[in-house]
Length: 361
Figure (cartoon, rainbow, N blue to C red):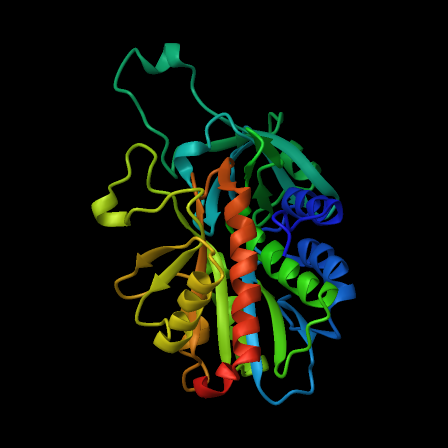
């Protein structure tokens, strides 16, 4: 396989997919982009009532293997509109209140998006007394209105979802930066696995279910639903994890993980030992760099939803190291993304060539 896996079409899809807003509960726009890209590489699609999308290769095979990412991004909800036209919010997922002040936002209404900003008192006024820090109860959005009625005339009401507009960019040639890399990069990576299988004319003896789940950011809900529909025999999940080399992160707590050193293989109760060992052996034999990470009780990813479903589904987690999670400048390294794709692709080859998939039953 060539050293650079991604072609121009792949990278155009990545930018389009990342730049599109796909907040939890409103993932349909992103799913359409994802399915359009994936369509040439799969035999059919499955979707469910809440929007999880699954591209299926070899759908008639009795043994089913899932590779999975999640499609939603963190966001805010309009929660309260003041008489003088300011908007207070609540979280939709794990949105970080500390990064909100001075950020631009898009408020999604039935009439389209309305721009606004998270306001914040000037430093001159804050220094006259006790310094206030950003908290959920004191951050607010200003959309240029002076009354509640003006806000409502724009189509804004309680329950409207709010996202950031920050778009994809590249730093120093190989660092990819965007909001919502967590975890639309997962959808990108599993789609690239499907592309490689198609382009390399790989025939699988099992059904492969390329699954882009919704609502991970609010409790793994999309994965919980779709695993009952698919009823897989094994699952390889991909998500992001923390690069721990930046300031204010304690390696003794978070582990020692770094951009550029490869995919991260998880060790956790939900991770099936044989499936994880197959992945590790694949990385070693194919000279794919990888790192290891231990989770105490849960992985906090869709791995948990798949593993503990349907009487138990052998599951494993391959993570992508990422800086600045749940901010608008999430950062990953291109080579790590390529190596996650390679590791999933080659692990499926190992299952296929050695008939290893059968012993996970």
